[in-house]
Image (tube, rainbow, N blue to C red; front, side, top):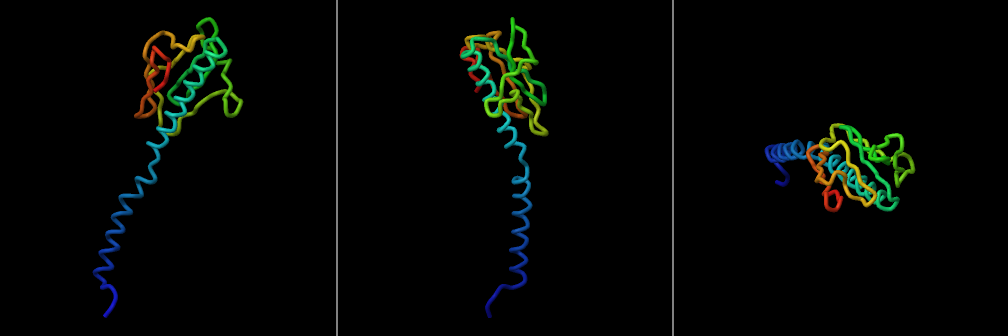
Length: 143
């Protein structure tokens, strides 16, 4: 006789069901992926703000709230929310909305002087969900 017995077929089905039960939640939970994407986008925004400060020889700020980050110009040390940097991709105001369930924390204001250096000259740390970004006082780089 050829073929599989009922017991063998049931064992294969049980093993397949266990694998599916373990794999599906990992495939559908995108929180970690969204956090990494938001962190990378925020890092790019900070780097862009620093380069704009250097090339245009004026102060630039990155303002953060728990759900949004935005890049704006500064005048005489005061950040001007009404004077946003233009988004390099779309041309509108440069803002970054956090994905649902991801919260920004840490420094609420990053300001770069006309040389691209952070003001005040301190290491600053921002958190994006469970991940973090540090802006170093010596270089202004966000890593």
